[in-house]
Amino acid sequence: MALPSPNVCELIRAHFILLGSPSWKEEERDRLLKLLAEHGLKWGDLPEVLLATANLGATTPPGLLLRHHFGWGDMPKVFADASAPQSPKKLQPFRRLAQCFGLFGQENANAAANTRKQLDAFLARHGLTWADLTAILAASATPPPSDPRVGAPHPYSKPEYTPAGLVEGLVGSYVTMSEPVSVISSLWTCFTHVYTRFAIAPRLAVVSEEPQSGKSTLGKATKRLVYRPNRTVLSTGAAIQRFLGLGHGTVMTDQMDHLEAEARRALQRIWNLGYDREASEISLVIGGKEAFFNLYAPMFSAGIRGFLAGMTTFLAPTQQSRSFALEMERFTEQTKPKYEYNVELSPENPESEKLIRVFDQVYSFLCGWAANVKLMTCH
Image 1: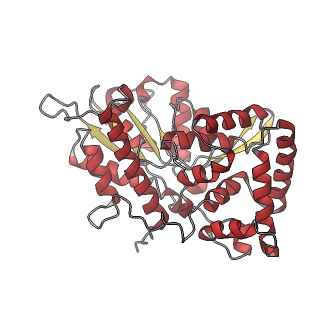
Image 2: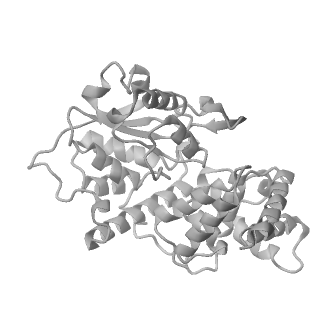
Image 3: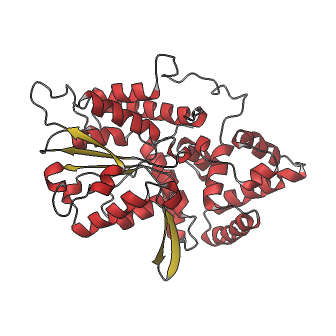
């Protein structure tokens, strides 16, 4: 099965996660089914799509797996064995989970609604959340050891390639920037793929004295490489909270100087709270019910320094202390990059298609690196 582009896979994942809401509606499930069909996929292909957008190395297996001494890598065989006529007793929960998941994707809306109740009961009984279900389904799609795709070398799986080096080389081909900006932004991009293993998430703030300094161009290139970025513009605090409610990800915002004062204040709060993993959870009343949001996530912003230094500054001293503030300069005809990164301008252009493919390959390399890397502790 050929998967659609990473952006489409992320969209499918977002639709599936939305179904985890207690107040989910049939219209949302119907939209997901139509989205799958539009890209030649079926409900049974969802686990592979979820795997393509997952970073299982950054999450701990839920209790259901640990109680049976299973890890993420055991899931393909577990689900395969669970489907056998006489599967071991300890595999029965996984057989039931697979049955409920499959039935939830059937076309009959009433039958699907009844199955969803059974699925909710199953999750509650085993102490699982919808996020756990998403991760388990993703892990179940991992190719078994006998699959010829396992062990196939990645285009960049060679000693001369490093995560930060790949990012710096690729982005530097399309964005004119100083060496410090290039190095720090590349390292930060890699950090977004492993940020859940750290206690703090430094922000990346790109500023300049004047327009047309490459801030948006750097943002566009970086957005294709950071871990699970928001697909649409998040211009309010509420929008960011909704995005983070879908799971781990990187918040990308641009042109902060165009935001209204109220939206800027909301983002300042999230900028501060989401920096510290231990102090990043807030509660809000939505529709008369209390909802909890964990705001811990990497964040990127860009704006004009002259505006940001005013009375309603976004990067106040507190925000600056939580950020890598990178200075961009307006390019001249001599320093203008040979190719400016703007694939949206001509999506059917062969050069644009080739560029997207390279960015996708580097993104997949970063996901693989994050899943296997062992981070060292400095003393």
